[in-house]
Image 1: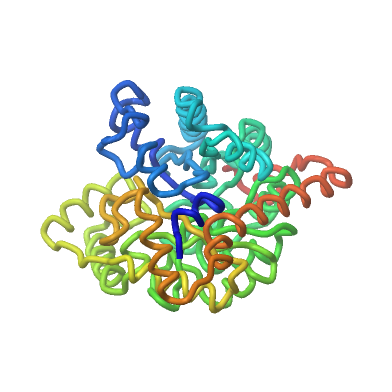
Image 2: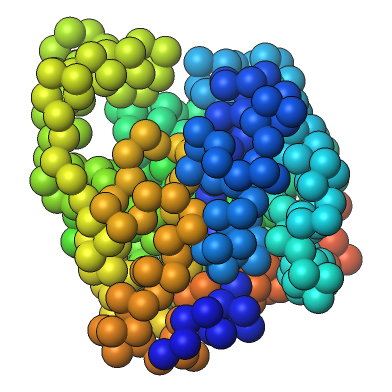
Length: 391
């Protein structure tokens, strides 16, 4: 198979990339110092490597850590959105801001990569549906309902369950996301939150960067019943490349580290303390290595369980320090496609994986929003009214 030709016609839409946070942490958003146009940056991502990887669109994560709460989280999220838009403006010969499926394809028609934004963690809206709506107006097209810690209205996969899934306000968040046309992202949430959101959502959901729990037993991955329900609702699971989510030895090593942290009173959900602890732990206990073949196994399992129309890619580049051997940066998507072709994936299968499934989901979410906006007013529900306590 001519993978280069396939990618020219069906470029990769990747669901999750943390370059914006790296730009903030490394150079305070100074793109003179982090010139991703020139290439050779100390990141997993730059424009030459995106071109080499056959990329057509990137959802930039406008992530902020859960140690930022309340108004501070909202402010930092706005700064992240601003950085994504500035990156797009600065490299306008190569990038085009996009908020719809049509705009993604218009970017391709002008030989540019589409820039999109997704907010990683419900703490970014500070319990406010009005804030959610304003993020949508700024171009944010998905919200991950939690990050590594619970929100007051949704349980995270890596925190102790409190709500048992979604609270009443959490269900209202999902309904309002459907109404405005923001994709519901179930990466990072607990399995019960996944199931609750799938039961509530009137539009297809996504996993922007998750893999299959049946292949690698990690709470960050989707169980088979969730993959099946995602498919019934028309959604897509964007397989991620994170070693501890795709390789069981890596997952077991991470679980051992989490247990050690808890023994010292440092839970994984406490990002401010767990980050330095994990750096020390891994320096003394080097984790195993994942490979491209591990990611192939997850792509195949999601296809088997959910169907070829419900699998995509969400590498999580620049969101982790180490990636599988063979998938070290954004230039390596052709290697993954070649491996899948070698496993019998057809050109049509690969086209759905790279972009067609995600474009379809985007269009269906847009269609649902148009219908709901004609029949449903914006929600004025407040978290204190629905859940009995202020955010």
